[in-house]
Structures are given as C-alpha cells and as structure tokens.
Image (cartoon, rainbow, N blue to C red; front, side, top):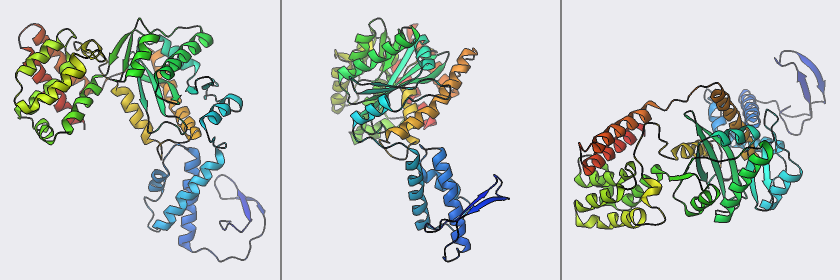
Length: 429
C-alpha cells in the first residue's frame, strides 16, 4: 500500500497481472483519487530509475517521467525528488566524514571490482591518494606513447580537492585509464600520484609506464612532477589552455573583447594571431612574436602583448619549447580531450563534490566504455577524428607548408591561422 502507516503488501508476477501472495491488512484510510494514484506510479518509476543509475541527476529522471503527465504539480515533483534521494541513500554504505575515513573504508571494508572481476580501487594510505584503475587500464596505459592529463576541482569527490585523470592515446583513440583523487594540489602529491601509478603497473603486471609524450595544462606543480617522474618524455603544454589564458586576458578588457569578436577588425585579427603562436616551431615563435609586436595597431594594446612576452616568450616557466610546435595532421595539439571528458563527467552528477560512493558508481559505469574501447583497439580498429577537427588541421597544415616554403610571411601565416581557429570555434559552439 502507498500509505506509510499501512503495512499491506501484494506480491505479483513480473507482468503485474497475477497476484502470487498477500500479507497484512489494510488500515482504515481514505481511498486515493485517480490523480494521487498516478502520482504514486510516477514516483515509483522515478525511484527505480534513481536506484538503477545512482549518478544521474534526479531532475533529469523526473523530467523524463513527467513528459506526458498533465497531473503532476510542483509540490508532487518536490516530494518525488526527496523520495528518490532517500531511495539512493539506502543503497549506499555509510558516508565517511573525513578523508581519513574514506581511505580506511576502501582499505579495510571495500574491495571494489569491475564487471570483469578486476580490482578497481587502490588507496595510498601514506599520501591520502585514492586511485581508481584496473589491470586492463594499466596495461593499456603502459602501451600508449602519449598520455594526456587533466583534473577537475568542482566535481572531485567529497573530502578530496581534485580528481586527476590520466588518458591514453593510441590508434586514434583517447581513453580515460586512471582516476586519481587527490587531497591537495601540491607538488609532492602529484609526484606521489605518479609514483603510485608506476608502482602499480610494475608490481601487478611487470610493465613500465614510459610514455614518449605527455600533454598537461599550464600548472607548475604537475609540470614539475611529470618532468621528474618521466625524464625521457617530451612534456607538452596544452594549446587549448594557451588560447584560453589569452582569451581570459582579452575578456578583462571590453574594448579588446569587442575587437576580438569582429572578423574585419584589425585589432581583432592581431589578437587572433597571438592565439595562433603555438602553431610554430619553438625556435621561430620568439621572432614571430617580435614581428607581431612591431605591428601593434594601437599603443593601448601593449599591455596585452607585454603579458604574452613576460609569460610565454621570455618566461623560464612556460618557454616556447613547452607550447610551440609545427602543426601536423596527426598531432595531439590539446588536452581538450581531457577537458571534454571532465565536462561530460561533471554533467552526470546532480551536485558538485558528489560523495565518494556516487563517484565510484559513475567511474564503474565509465569503465564499461573503457573496456569497449580496449576491445576496439585490440581488434585493430582505428578511431576517427571529427570531420571538423580534420578540416581545421588540414587547413592549418596547408598554411604552414606555405610559410615553410616562404610563400607567405610569418605574420600572414599567423593571421590566417588565427582566423581559421576562430571560424572553427564559431561553427562548433
């Protein structure tokens, strides 16, 4: 019975056409109206969906269930949402109150395994780092020449500061392979994370993590940790974040932002050319900057160019060797792969900093996609880049060939590449 005070129950077959047994007696309570009965049916459907997918936002489920319902009112939706949260909480273990309790819970009580029976959780008690990965993922990570790394702060599990994800790139596939929940964003923590991953691969599989290329964001602590942990790898900073950092600077100035958005604006073209600087070899980028600097449309723009000079040209923290290189058709030019993953991951959760059990369920679901990608790779099937991505790469490579053959000047090359990148963003946004 749907009345909380009534203990009457009926057991039916799966088609709900045959009553198998009854228990309890109905108390004297008012009969539900047709509308109330329909609300109960929708609430039950929402609860089932919520418990089947713990990481799905309740409001998404409610929207789907009430799509063809004219009788659900706002108070009903609020009560249904509360009921969904209560149903989800019943399925989850007790929530840890501190980071230490999280680690102890996974170390002593919870041996998490994937659908293939592979151990999935690895708590590092000394460093307070909780790693989610498995033998399949570690083996694929060891086989990848290229690793792409990035983190999310807003949707890191509760009691952790960041979830740092390691993606492998092979045969045109970008696949998340290790999720590291970090207690802080300090250099020693990143170093401990990488040491733990290397030890797991070696101890469990006898393989060595030795990537040739590592793509990271412009952050000092992880950059230093990757350099020290993988001294033979080429560390590459993200062109996407280079552009984002410059655009942040542009957005802080309304005049610059207005010019940047106008395709025919001389100032806008000049700003877009700066964003195109990473599409040059590192030894060419400084001279190209000087040429752009010499043709600044207005004296008021020198503060922007000085920012680029101090941070990316003369800087020992982020020199051109870190972020500049000639474009190629198969080059992985950005950690936008990881950014896109985190964007989708964040959208799966109903709130920021989800509890660790909701995070775990979400990652176990994602692991099924990783298994699918692994099977695809083992079958020898290459991944395909989006048509838009291929188009922009081909256009930039063709422009670079003209510059390399001295058919066009470096400034014309940068102006054309800047416009091509801006046009691509307009079409894809």
